[in-house]
Every structure is written in structure tokens, then in C-alpha cells.
Length: 270
Image 1 (cartoon, rainbow, N blue to C red):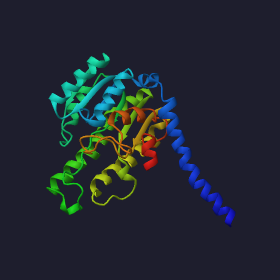
Image 2 (cartoon, rainbow, N blue to C red):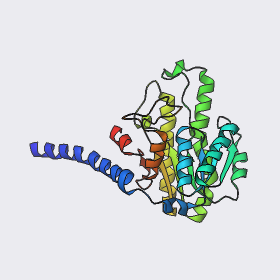
Image 3 (cartoon, helix red, strand yellow):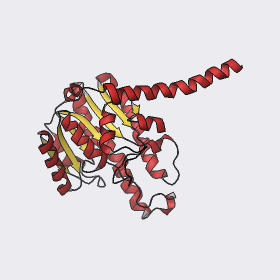
Image 4 (cartoon, helix red, strand yellow):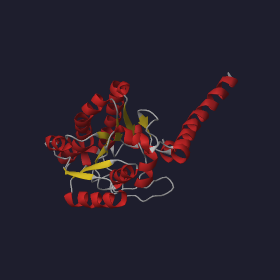
């Protein structure tokens, strides 16, 4: 009995260490070649693309050889980021102004995506309650907060996937990264609505991957912990990555399965 318990203890230690080693090798040493991303298609579409993680993905994918289509609510910010990417990388950049709080925007988005060879979709747009952290019934303007968070964190992922996935299925290739959160790994009091929308993303992503993975399409849910951004209101530190570092490392984890922390520091926290 004592030997069995020792064996179980060793396995409990080794399994997480093995996963962390795999993250380290991918993100620090080996990575995924740029040719993998460009082979998916000419264009990468990114929602919530003018700040934080979305903006970082836009720059990183442009550096890796893709043309970029940015979707966000501020035309001024969209044009600024587009100019930055074009000047830094020489890639083509298009913009679509859309506020994901509204649910009548998807016909407009679909129309503007027609004819593009879209190889990558980053479902990044997301919001958190303004009065965070707080109990569910104590949120500021609860009716609006509930509707807005479901529209942005849930509906946007489903509708954007519905728009982009059919062409990927036809071409039998494509990459969809859905940005969830480490807060979805367990019940999260005081952020219960936010974490619940993020676990929806995880279940939706993994279900879609099971359905379409055989078509050579990768649909992965990323579940990071601390990333410095305007939404998180945090700065980079020992356990908090910059958005640029997270985008770079998480792209090197796209072959790690349907659910991924996105980098070594996040896997350690998970």
C-alpha cells in the first residue's frame, strides 16, 4: 500500500512537470514555423483588435507573413493600428468597424469578409463587468451588463465561427483560436458571470474541434491567467505576461490540443 501511494505521488508530480517541459520546449526553443501559419490562408481575422491581446496578435501574425483584418468598435483606433502594422511589416491590412455589444452586426461583417482567403480567426473580443469584483446581484446596471457580456463574450465567438468556418471546411484547412480565461478553470465567485461566459468558450471550442478536427482544421481554446491589458488593468510582472509575449508564445502552442494555457507561466498557474 505504501509503495502504491509513493507511485501515485510521483505521477502527481511528473505529469504537470512533463506538461510544463513541453510548453518550455515549444515556446522557448522550437516553436511553430511561420510557414505553418501562412499555409492556412492569406488573411488573419482578429476581433477586439485595437488593444491588448488582440492588437498583439495582429502585429505578431503580420510579422509571420499574413495579411490582417481588424475588427473593433473604434474606427480611429482601427486605422491607427492598421497604419502601425503596414509600416512595420508591409502586410496588407483591412478594417471593419463593429461593436460586438450589438447583435445585428454580423451581416455587415460577413459581407466585408467575402472573397478573402481567411486562414486564421482569433476570437479575442471580450468584456468584464465594470464593477468588478462583486456579487452577481450587485453589478452596476445588471440588465445591461448581463446582455452586453453575453453578446460580446458568447455570441461573438459563435457568430464569427459560423461566418468563417464554412470556407475553412471547404478548403480543409484553417486555424481558429478562441480566447477564454484561466478563471474558467473553476467556479469564480465575484466574477461568476465573466467566468461562466469563458467556460462556454472552452466547451464550444472543444466541441467544434471534435466535429471538424478531421477536416484538418484546428480549433483551440486558450485559457491564460495574468496578461497585462487595458481590461485586466495590470502591468507585466513575474506571473503576468505582456500581451505581446502571450501572443507570441501562444501561437507556438497551437499544436498542443483543443485546450491550452498558452504558455509556460500560465501552465504553471493552471
